Length: 301
Image 1: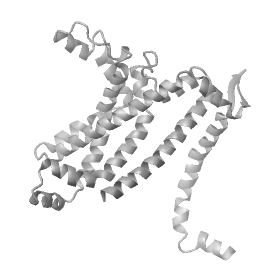
Image 2: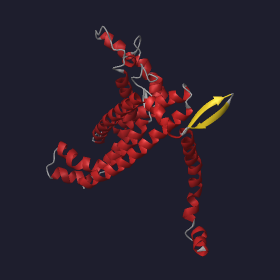
Image 3: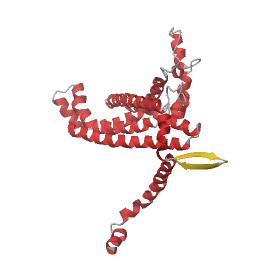
Image 4: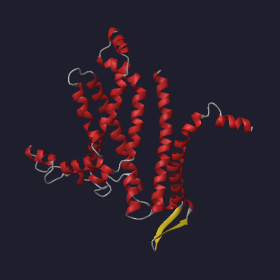
């Protein structure tokens, strides 16, 4: 038994295990330890007393706090609306742009460079820029509408009915480039012989997209949508700069609510519990999404 263990640890093929040991150690330190701390905080009531952090174990008592929280349901609803809207719009727009630019022979590099510019700008800078354009007094959109004869231009981020839509527009402008790059790489990886065979068989542009490009691109599209869903669920900085979750709770997403519970209400344990709840939900969602994508790929052949 000892000799077998030595062979595994110090034998000829042991290098592949030792080579990943530093990475595994870093992963444990910077992932497992914070998760363990989050678990400990989520079952405790934490408060600062005379400059010291005092912890009191309450077990599942955070469920009572969750039931009494009037904002968490609104935040979850806003988050789901935001995620579904931006992922669907950005996937469709990114795929359409990638398809159009992949067929462009002249100025293709220029078009690609222009499309990816929003992705290069920091989210905080984008939020600041769009908040100036949304400004009711001197913003770009208000000025254009007034010049066109609109007497009462919308309040954009100050209107509860328009605030979330305004945030979605900003996110679509920012993150469509991300989906575009993935889609473009997928389209350009399709063998030209496959497309040429479809043309020889008499397939028009619509049938080629429907029966050739989309089935081949299905795995790429599913992975792109998964990555974008995870990122969209964690949205914070743009909303913080644009609306801070307002007006009222119109743009209050779950990440913004956790931030306010932690930094404004100083309910550290409850904020940790909400963070853990979000992490658990995303883990279940990713597992379900991977299973569903596998089923879709099987059906598409």
